Length: 185
Image (cartoon, rainbow, N blue to C red; front, side):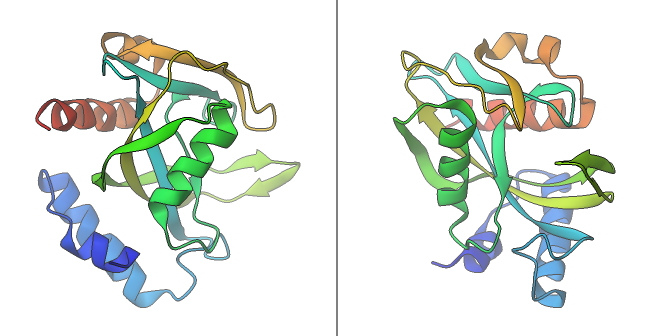
């Protein structure tokens, strides 16, 4: 199944996901460059909600741009295997190598607003991330490595402590939604 079919076949969890799915599919239909950052208005991103084996902790990085602890992930940059993007970004941003999907299906579908910011010395205008999230399992015993150009911290955080680490209320709601869905797997 290709990435567009995966999104079309995704069963929205709630009204937010239903509406976001409609908008993401509309953007896919209207923009040929939706998989790349060439689309300055909106582009596809992929995130990983990385759980330990006992599923009581999530691996998070301290995002320099967002000034908050958050999930791993990144831009599709032309790649149409969004699960592969989520896994690649997890490895690059945390240093862990032993990661695998808990399930290969999308766990969350969200439109995430990104404020204008400076990245690598250049201004990036405000835009939307059309984000697909996967539930990934990682090895909590592996050494963690900071990716200094993107984050300034990497650590395992208990699910109960996410709200005390996340300073983005909209993103915290997404994390809580994912936790509810994960517990029903």
